[in-house]
Every structure is written in C-alpha cells, then in structure tokens.
Image (cartoon, rainbow, N blue to C red; front, side):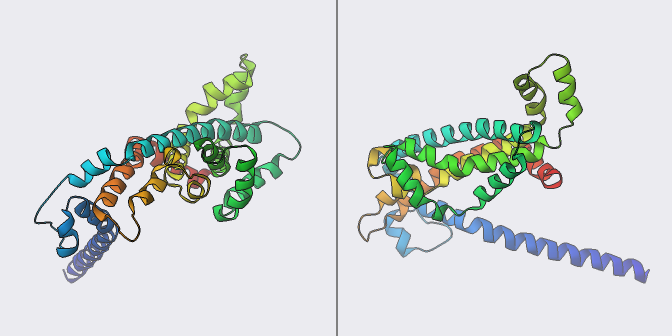
Length: 282
C-alpha cells in the first residue's frame, strides 16, 4: 500500500513538473506574439498609456492604414516573387545535384559533397561583400532578380545537403530495376526517387521559403528603391526619423508572418516526418 502511494505521488510530482515546464515554455514562446497582436489592435493613444494585456478599446485602423496608405502589398508581391522563384530553383537544382552526387560515379564526388556542406556553413555576413561585386557586375543592383541570385547561394547548398541524406537511403535495387525496365536516369529520378523523398522535398521547400521570406541583410545592401523592396526591408520605411509607429509596424509584421505560418501548417505532416527521418538516416 505504501509503495503504491509512493508511486502515485511520484507520478503526480512528475506530471506537475511537466505541466509547469510546458506552461513556462508556452508563456516564453507566445508572449511576444501576443504582444504584437495586442499592440496592432490598440488605438495610438492607448499603446503608451495602457500597457495592459487586454486592451480596453480595439481598432483595426492600423491594418487599414498599412493596406491602403503604404506600399505594403507591393512589398508582399516582391517578397512572394523572390521567395517562390528561390524555392522552386532550390528544389530543382538541389535535387539534381544530390542525385548526381549519390547515384552517379565521377571523380571528386565526395569532395563535391563535402564542399556543399562547407558552403552552407559559411556565415552570410561574410559573403555579402563578394556577392555585392558579383551582383554589381551582373547589373542586378536594386533589382529583385539580384536577390533571387543571391538567396540561391545559401538555399541550394541546404537543399542539396538535405536531399543527399535521403537519396542515399533509397535502395539501389529499386532504381536498378527501373533502369533494366528501360527507364532513363531522369525517369527513374521522377518516378522512383522523388515519390520516396517527398518529406525531404517538403522540408527543403519550407526552409527555402522561410529563409528567403525573412532575409534582411542582402535586401538592405542590394535594394534601394521602394518599387523593389521586399517586406522585411519595407517595414523599415514605416519608421519616420525617431518616430516609431508601433501600431502599423505590428500590424504589418503580423500580416507579413502569415505566409510562412500557412506554408508550415499545410506542409506540417510531411515536414515532421521529413525532419525525424532525416535525423536517423542522414
């Protein structure tokens, strides 16, 4: 009887600690997001005068201002073009590169695979000076095409590295059987390899989308005109001198965060399986 009560107390204590841990984690994670939401729906006068968790008055003026009085939709369009082009190119190029490294036999294959990882690990802050010279030489300064070229320098190595781990775990016998049946290399890649690597493709798409959508440093250095600004860079334009319009800035930040969230919700099933499978197979 005493042993049973001791075990019950131990389980209760464990449940309490787990609950407290989850509560602290939830507060730590959600408080900034909650504060952004609250600030975005407060009238300007209450933002400074009423630092409360629950606003006494709610307004949608900040959202209306951002959507109708600023180039917010233009910034979203530029970010969407850059992000979609970068994500698609990363998937195609990364898949072909990973397939060549894992399935074809050529001299220096291992060296190429290792250099891909090293390239991915180089800090972005060290690359923007040489990338500036490259983009300037190509005549792509102040153009979102320059951002697309630049973002591919860090999304393609990640896509290639991710796909290498998956392709190496697809049995060679499956592809050999397809080749014996008359498939070409491209057909075996499309019909055999890619269906088995859908979780990896989802992870690559999500990470490429998120990295490109949230990137700021290259956009700040390479873009100057309003017509070419992306969303992260355009948010700075809301600041006038030393005046920070917190309501519109929070509204724009919240609207700008929706696309990556929606992409993650849609691809969550494949992303979770892709990350977990990659952790044991890569």
